Image 1 (cartoon, rainbow, N blue to C red):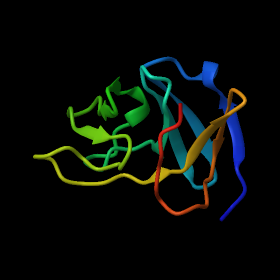
Image 2: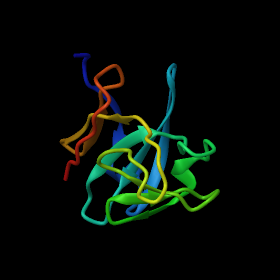
Image 3: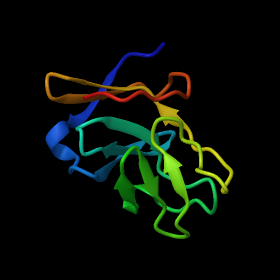
Length: 112
């Protein structure tokens, strides 16, 4: 597994909002839930590649701003009846900092 990369602080991501981390592999969206959990997903909807970071965060999902697809933040899976998946990344919150594993297996977990 790769090393953890600090990409910001909890305060950088608004509650029920998102921030984008630009990487060589593409843009990764960091999402913050009401319970201060942080999730990381590719910043593109599996439907028409809409910017998920501009969507609405609710519970542990984000709604794409283009066509209202709901994407689960824990799995990256589209909520039925829609089908598709977006890559998720391991993320952890430590000492107020947000750390991301970009080269790790596509799996995400909540922190809080």
